[in-house]
Amino acid sequence: YKAAKVEDGKLKVIDYKSGRKPKKEEWIENYKMQGAAYSVAYYDRYGTMPDGFEIWIANDVQDKPQIFKGSQQDIRTYFEKFHELVKAYHEKYTKKPWWNVYINNSQNLDFWIYVETFYLVHSYNIKQIN
Picture 1 (cartoon, one colour):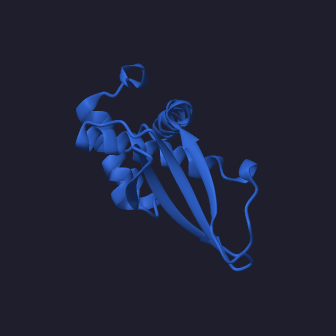
Picture 2 (cartoon, helix red, strand yellow):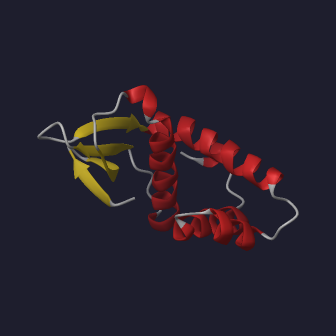
Picture 3 (cartoon, rainbow, N blue to C red):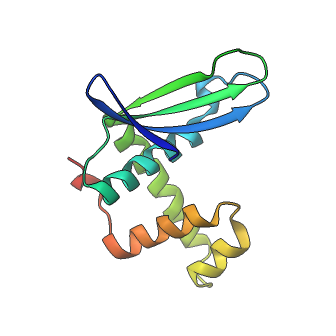
């Protein structure tokens, strides 16, 4: 995540993106999964589950960024989807140690190392989110 903010007493994790054209909400499911993963990472680090997340997307067409909001329920929903993607990725690359897979295939190595460490150390169960 890029930032966390409190607005009206609610903690939100914010991820900033950019693009050439405005996005339709149905095009940004992966961004929502990332927002959920960042929210869970925030929870893991600080012990407080955010009330939601926001995806801010600046583009070349509009003066103000698009803002897509996710609730705490969305964190649960999209983190479950994210978790399934990570599991599928591991099933596909079971013959290699995880660090070789991520070093060779990830553009965002720091994020994936954090995610892998998060799963290995905490054996996270989505049902434990309060």
